[in-house]
Length: 328
Image 1 (cartoon, helix red, strand yellow):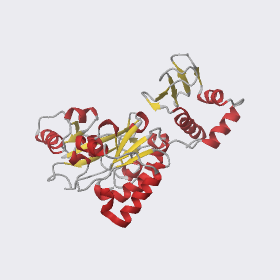
Image 2: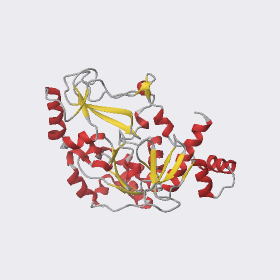
Image 3: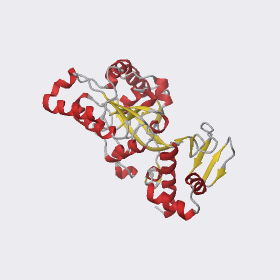
Image 4: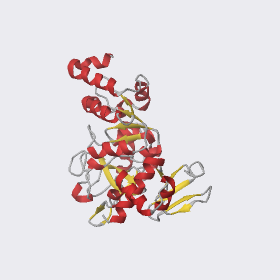
């Protein structure tokens, strides 16, 4: 990474932390104007080195904008302030995701789930609608599709986008007699330059909504709608936790599967130092998708937001009395 790229990434971190900018379109991030208070009228663009407001007509470079906002007299003072106080955001990481030095693309046989009259298409829609209880129109809106040939034949494909760029995709086989017979044929770090531990499904929700639902799988995230965010497993990696903590999201409802209760408790404790947290747990083995969104929401309503101290108490009870937490 060049020096300029590092500064640009720190500038983006500055605007995210200070003004809660949220991803918009064509590389722009938007927020309320810090100069005229225009609602969502202010935008920054790292590529164009520009900060603009369409209400008060502010239009200057990013470095100059920070200088004015922070009362710095020189560019050197501003650079020192940025370098000493703001880490590089992870935008460069996602910008570099490639397969064989070309932009990552969906499998050649990929089709949106609402299209295709053949057996593969009909079976994909039947699986997601009848077995998973998800709306085909909503899945289409979220870019979900399937493959009817090749390595991913018989798989549902779930693309992951960041700032309108495809950075990863995961899959779930619904026709088990095809391919290698495995439920999942996920991309490897060797193929795309980054592993699943550095991926968060529906990551943009962290920058769009005040409250999100944190779950294990993509299907569980889709069950919870636009605010559903998936970790791809029972525990969060250091990278994933850092991304969540540094994002502007304020309220996090943790809905990991019942067999990951200890991991959920530990995650809740860590996040509670930075965010408002509601840890949800229930008896049985059904996950969010099997219960459905309505039942899951009814369970969520039974819980209050928990302090770090309360979460530590829950952990103590779980480790010493096991089932007692379900009667609290």
